[in-house]
Image (cartoon, rainbow, N blue to C red; front, top):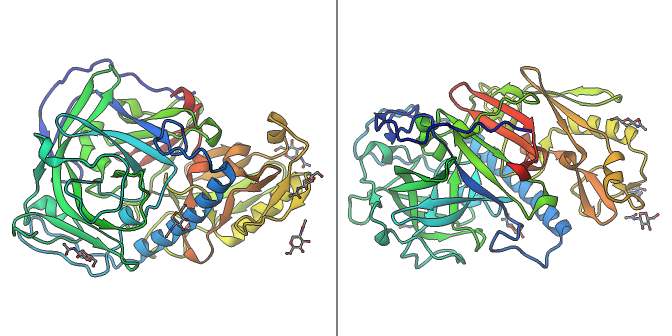
Length: 469
Ligand SMILES: *[C@@H]1O[C@H](CO)[C@@H](O)[C@H](O)[C@H]1NC(C)=O
Ligand SMILES: *[C@@H]1O[C@H](CO)[C@@H](O)[C@H](O)[C@H]1NC(C)=O
Ligand SMILES: *[C@@H]1O[C@H](CO)[C@@H](O)[C@H](O)[C@H]1NC(C)=O
Ligand SMILES: *[C@@H]1O[C@H](CO)[C@@H](O)[C@H](O)[C@H]1NC(C)=O
Ligand SMILES: *[C@@H]1O[C@H](CO)[C@@H](O)[C@H](O)[C@H]1NC(C)=O
């Protein structure tokens, strides 16, 4: 089990305004306080859009397609020209790097939702937690030309702590692209995309609240977020927005910076535990260092939004191992790390040669009859009819991911195989194909307590029952 440290002091120790690692975002520091947010599985009955008619199989196929969309998006993101270093503060400069790519609008459903509280009085918002992007945004009133959402829109006029950021300010220059709004003094973003999608709104600040270990809410003022007033795109009507958890300046975790000591963690319940919620932890609650934990370096790469790891090899007990190429084709040459850990991608993507080797090792272990996957996504599938319940697990090997720093992560059958039909299970490891992007996806992360330490640049993983966290 993961050891979740309870903080012993919930007192507000100090109100020091410190600079975060991002260098310019002031936050209020609560020493030693751990706090958390509710993490809800999208298909859980807790989720307001639980679709009782869709089967788990169709959901998996949809998630598999999304995994490829996501890899293609990451490829574009990684291929963007590296911007020149920004000189702060560059007053009134309107930056425009031309073809901006942001996953904020390319999301199109992930598997988990995060409950955050915004404004004064607080409003609960269910948003997509995204380790693959930075900006926090929600659709705001008025929203005449916006994608339909089922939850009420956030109303900035009803919140006493809402403020629009002026253009020409340092926070405004952290946006990859901004203009001075219609009134000439509001920091406005308009992210546009090749497919005609866009999200348009004002960079703003607002108080965000979280549940603390002691039960009280922790209020954190002046968090930069995007209040979207116009949008079009491939969003799900049940998303009220997105919480960027990437490594870039505007992400929630970077803005919280020293408040959370650079630490956050999550534990994703498995698909069979869809009735459960778990916690997304910050600060003192996010330390993962129990007896079963392993630690690997987080590698700074380009873009800084993404979390890179070095995957050295994959092994199947008794059937050999395959070394993984040390770089990804899509990465800029100076980027280290060969796989991105991402909460928003379901499957795990590895290069074709690695995948073939893993498939061969797995095929030599599993004695069930082979079947072809009719969806065309999976390369190795088995007919498990005749095995029920726990017996099914025993038919599949444990696959080990060996990350740098000696971190060996043992994937249990439900981390590495997925049922695509009532009698068919497939290896949920697929080829990154021509995206050239390797991703360690959410299925492989299920029932691990995963802690990110952005100060020490370390990632820790510990097997856990996320239902109990
Ligand atoms: C968005 O998701 C839906 C449902 O999963 C899927 O049918 C659709 O093709 C996706 N669109 C894009 C552009 O990814
Ligand atoms: C934002 O960009 C989209 C697509 O280019 C455009 O249709 C929309 O009018 C823009 N919004 C503003 C306020 O300029
Ligand atoms: C498959 O691997 C497991 C250990 O992961 C081992 O116990 C079992 O004997 C293997 N089966 C075959 C057929 O190789
Ligand atoms: C799977 O498909 C391949 C080629 O499409 C075919 O050669 C093979 O016989 C099929 N296997 C089964 C078990 O249907
Ligand atoms: C799996 O095996 C069962 C029993 O032999 C058979 O009835 C079923 O059609 C098979 N399923 C597939 C997808 O081949």
